Amino acid sequence: MSINTMPLGGPSLAGLTLKAHAVAVPALSSHVRPALVLAEQDARRLLDAARSHEVTRGGLFACSPAGVQVWDRPWTAPDSPGDAVHLGSVDWSYDTPVKHYVTIYRAMVTAAGVERGVTTETVLKAVLDLTGIPLDGARITMAIPPPRDPFRRTA
Image (cartoon, rainbow, N blue to C red; front, side, top):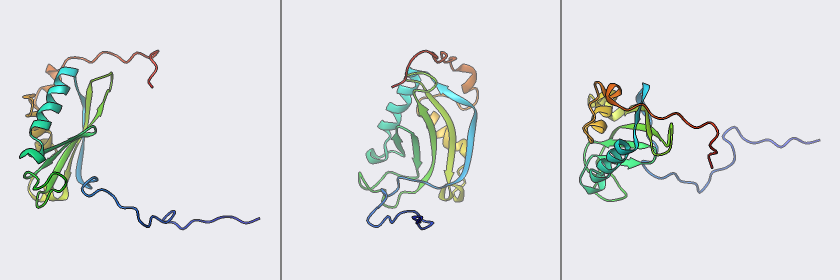
């Protein structure tokens, strides 16, 4: 009987390349507790505002389904940040706890952000400021999300 072995690094990944700037390594991370839940209209306003201030349009934000990245300056080209530095991110879950709601659960700062004095609080504040939601008291003024229907199938 022979046993097939695989090197510790896993299978060979020759020819595999990652998209540049797709993954950021956090130097400082803070979980938002309790998580900040945005209702559908607030979530849409936040996404629209982040897209209108996109790094490719002269702004400081890069929006994705997983959250918003904060940069120190606009990108020089649509697919390349050039000299722009990624300072941090606000991460969320979309359609949580229910459809069209956004749950903000983490703020993260990169090593470059830490060097420039950026904190998880300033990153979160910069993103929330896009829609005028104040960082202080945001949970008090937010509507309570409806409970998830345990009998509804998710597909």
